[in-house]
Picture 1: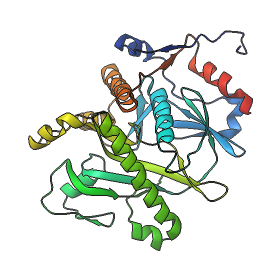
Picture 2 (picture 1 turned 90 degrees about the horizontal axis):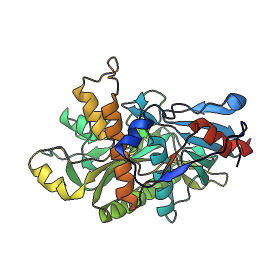
Picture 3 (picture 1 turned 180 degrees about the vertical axis):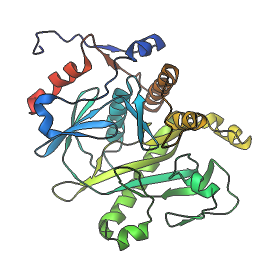
Picture 4 (picture 1 turned 90 degrees about the vertical axis):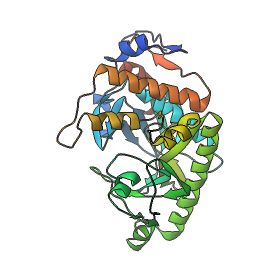
Length: 336
């Protein structure tokens, strides 16, 4: 394989990612994947950059880090962790619903089929927790007892489990997601009743599968969100990502009960750690703390740790001696 400048790619897969390697990657993060020659096909999301082609799209998972609906900076190797973990979960759940993946040619890249995306994020929760504006605990603490159409019992405490998983949808908004109930979705005709009924069934089956596989690895799948769309034949198809540390909350199973009984926060392996750090730094829409190198490495380590715990596999990173964009361009150019 040769690049346009005749450099040979020497991309090695490292089995053990050290703190020193993460330190070296701090200035080699994938911030943006914008190629000038394909500019007219380019679209930028919060974390993923994409190129819209006939009947498919190229999704490039960057290292951008978002929280509370803001992009905060970058986390080394985060894009590869998310992309590979989404691939793992799509494969593990392929018997429940079809997914968007055509191929995964690179650690940061997924080639996906084009879908008509449903304008609702399907959030599934098993615990009363969270710190974001839409989080169920945030509302419960303020006295809300009707949350997305679910009647919440009095006397519950933070991080307590519900009797069963509940679906708490949100709208997909460019700025801030808004909570919405099942009845509102149907009354406003946002999604057809028969489609929404199937979406709910699929979401609960996905969550149950996630709980099962996470438990085998000593983890609790706390909550997550799913994005779905319709293919050309009207089949409900999984999109975006599932059960990654960006879309889901995971706790360490062994320590949960003791910490819960002591009123302590569970040990987490997701970006809730970062959310709490931001809150401690006085985060608001008008005051967005800068991510220092220490927190960037800590978040990267947690993401990699979660990948390895969930999959039972070592995380294999593509560490290059050429710029990341050159590596990616070589992998995707034949699609244009």
